[in-house]
Amino acid sequence: MFRTGKLTVAVTALLALTGGVLGVSAAAASQPSTAVTGETYVIGTDTTFAPFEYREDGELTGIDMDLIRGIAANQGFTVEIKSLGFDAALQALQSNQVDGVIAGMSITDERKLVFDFSDPYFDSGVQMAVAEGNTEITKYADLAGETVVAKRGSEGETFANSIKNEYNFTVKALADSATMYDDVKAGNSVAVFDDYPVLAYGINQNNGLKSVTEKEQGSSYGFAVNKGQNPELLAAFNIGLAELKSGGEYQEILDTYLDAPAASKDTSFFGLLSDSLPALMKGLGLTLLATALSIVIALVLGVLFGFFKVSESRVLRGLASVYVSIFRGTPLLVQAFFFYFGLPQLTGQSIDVLTAGVLTLSLNAGAYMTEIVRGGIQSVDPGQTEAGRSLGLGYVMTMRRVVLPQAVKIMTPSFINQFVMTLKDTSLLAVIGFAELTYQGQQIYASNFRTGETLLIVAALYFIVINLLTMLSNQLDKRFNK
Image 1: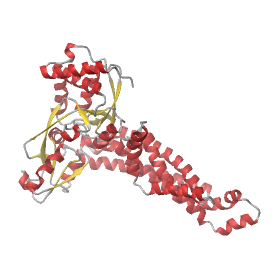
Image 2: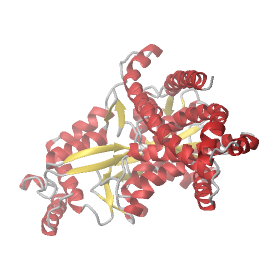
Image 3: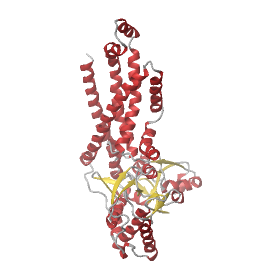
Image 4: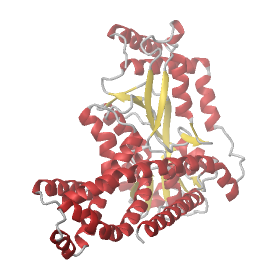
């Protein structure tokens, strides 16, 4: 990516600083920064943090999204948004998969050691909420001996941990607000600590909770880049932010989301199904694509390394054993994080989420298929091989004509099971921002807080597709193994 010289960056940063000090927009006295004009930046964000980022009608929206897009338009650059999840977005930034992160991220001293932050764009705070019908918990002292929930890595978790010993309660952390709210409504936790605008938005959208404490003073949100990197982007963000504030657009964005009334959509189950189906079908399409690609590659790997496993060559057997040991001996989730975040750090080359997902699924499934092929071949009576050799057939011809036809019949049920497992494993790719079926479901219930009904629809789609895949596989089994 082309970048202009250090002098332009320094001047841009100086303008941003002086604009903030004098209380006027730096950009008001100059044209948008030429350092970023025409550039495209990849920006990481959370997946479910309404009203700052969430999906509505399949489109990513919210305060952060409107803000970064408004600043980009003001400063003459474009942004490509990657919705990853908070933890994954920070890892993507550190591995240079994205240029910056905007995700309701609190500016803290610890984070300043790793990231450079913009000027604060929102002053946050923390509130506690309980289920609507709970009349026993009204203050922190009522939490003694109880469990509360907060979002992992958030200001709410930090605050809850800071007072837990004083009030003798336990804190557990979950990944997103919608899940936390459901945890409280289910009675698994008695209260939730969350950023007050997020909590207020959820209550406004009828999430089944009520706030019971005043807002605690908290830190501010900032836009982040890697330390020492993209200073021109940071300076442009500050200038654009000052411009939006002076022009009134900033306040309009806040009012749009923080003062909005509860949505007046059809609240019936069929209304939810109708609203959700387009996004879910898009996710299902990506699920099937990733599954098909992974199964084909895994099948090739499984057959290849399966033959290596039964080879007379010690080198080939050793190579296959190492492959199987690595991918069967490590969790699929760790493999997904490695290919998407770790590999770019080691090689310096970025990798798109579909490629990372297919690599993860195919290499993992291929290891299991290797053992299926090995087991199928070795389950054929050794006397069959000896009979073929005694008839003058070579090793390859004996395998092709005698052993494999019998082994395939043994392996087919296990292959079908592995195909189904691979399809279901695509749901784990949601953690790296792959927009498959489970990911789309998370996006939907993050904004409407109808978790149970949304997951029921998602489960039904998985059930239908998996049963169709099983039926197709069984028909192929009958045709080829008569």
